Length: 347
Ligand SMILES: [Zn+2]
Image 1 (tube, rainbow, N blue to C red):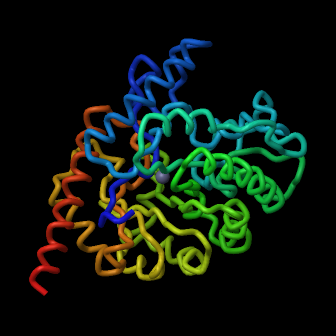
Image 2 (image 1 turned 90 degrees about the vertical axis):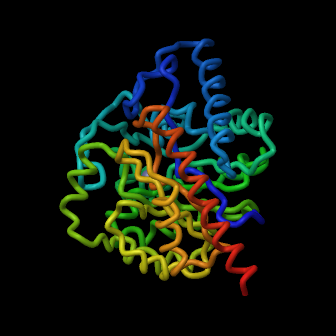
């Protein structure tokens, strides 16, 4: 990307109310069969149009074709029994009934290739595509086969690599792995979580990103955040090894988060997707608020490596709030571009 401070979102965008119940996370589909397939495609087209109208530079599918950022991928895999549920604690934070790994995991056929192909046919803009990360996948399942989180993560990494290679061939420019669990299991991240990501990106020529956040604005997450104290230093545990990794971009939460921005310095040399939009609040940021977050981040990341992003996905917000936030993101990034170009003219 030659444009300074390109804008993009970390993940999901709200779905139209005819596709699933609005302002609800992981809401079930309202359509079935052929109508559902067509409805998902229509939603993807609407989501793309909304991003483009808001001036978003690097677009995505807004996750319109998936109900859940992890399980929609997992339900396409062999070796996972979606009906056999066990209750486990997710990210040490909340209990959920999850599918069970009952045998060797593998991928029979591509999961998102058709969706990418469709999105690519609609736009020439750079596309970012999100996949779940291996550690977060492991943390969202009950495993009665491998009995080793590391082993299962490495198996998933191989599967993700197959998928990523096919998405790249369809024209995806950035493949992002969502790893909210990276903010919780620090020893595992450093022992095998980052190596699993390295395995997942092996041989790719497109850019690769990892998204690490404090989660959607749901109660379990906001309650957890209250226990983290006045300074959120979780990133400090993982950034040094991510800085040494082969991943190109790191997506992190900044706006309204208690993350000391100097932790970004630990990533020096990497491209950084700075979260300048709070997804846990319905208040639409002003362009100046967005600009302030980006301006502060510029103390720790070179301007040509700064990407203006959201903190996380916006699926649980109303469409009008999400649209407003996208527009604020674009306008805020533009304010900083103007400042940088004025500085350059003055120098
Ligand atoms: Zn997130």
